[in-house]
Length: 162
Image (cartoon, rainbow, N blue to C red):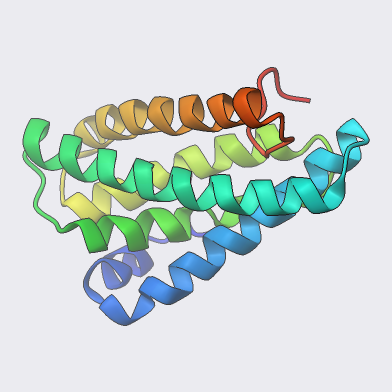
């Protein structure tokens, strides 16, 4: 799912795809909430709502971090809107998180999709994209885990993973 360089290059420049990227994030994060709730025998409604909220917050935070790190540290050229779109579409593999215990494999897949998305979105080489994604991923995961702990929700990025 979405390991297509040409697609990310189109998404980078096509502002009309922002809403579609947002839908991907919300739906994929909600699906992850279902899988997490089933795996942990918790409230599906709370997990879906919490997963969607955390997904959107994490997406925007990760996009902002990738944009700042990629442009200021690694010399990439893009806008925040472009990062929002490419990273939003990179969330697509989270859809498989609806199956209990596939949240972690989905997260790894998102990491690889994000590497490609950030590389193409920032127009930088793979090494610089890896640095950008690594820092952004840690920020995203940290916020999601923090929301889990503070709000007591079962979101798609629990630590430890189910």
